[in-house]
Image 1 (tube, rainbow, N blue to C red):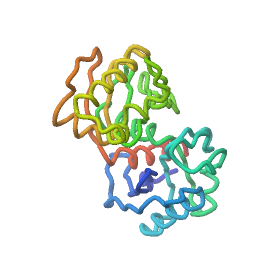
Image 2 (tube, rainbow, N blue to C red):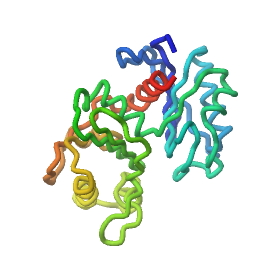
Image 3 (spheres, rainbow, N blue to C red):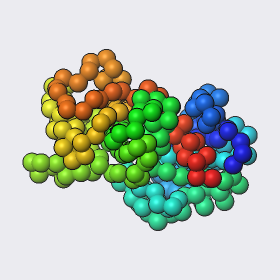
Image 4 (cartoon, rainbow, N blue to C red):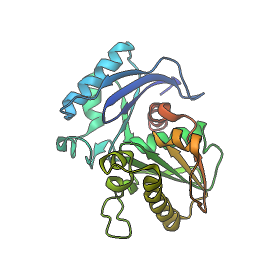
Length: 250
């Protein structure tokens, strides 16, 4: 791929967002364009939405896509928060057939992490860095010496005390479902982050997703062994990182 410009796509639970990215500088060269995620988030419905975004930009070049699940060699392997019809779908082939463009698909948290490591809060850090995207769900990305270890689905860890899915207990959706106060939610967050610390002994944890803004304003009301910082690219990280992945793997 010779061009430094890639269409980055971030597939979310409520919206599918895209923009053209200059992967040399890490800057979006267009405004972000968002369409609602189809209510029946089947593979074809989602791909049709991505095709509309590509058409919006009159795009003919490479496309990078961040998907909320495990991606192995372009194939979807988990579908915890989307339609079960995604399992074992070759997303890259489906997108190429629909759009006519070369497409690269990666886990959405991995995409956000790649953007933060290249252009944001993790830039130049050669230690063990963990990116946690905390919003409706929990996404995770792990880097060591600047290299990605893909598909770390730690949002679904079992936690001490019989908690069989960390995301359902700790995420912002859990806060709303359980009607938690800020103090109650932070106690759960402390349990989760301390568990991550004890499992992996990271040098840095970067917090993205909706919780990043809360972290900037309030800070964490509990102590951690690890330095914890908010993501710098915020809502643009998934789009930029997907574009970076497409450039890297093409």
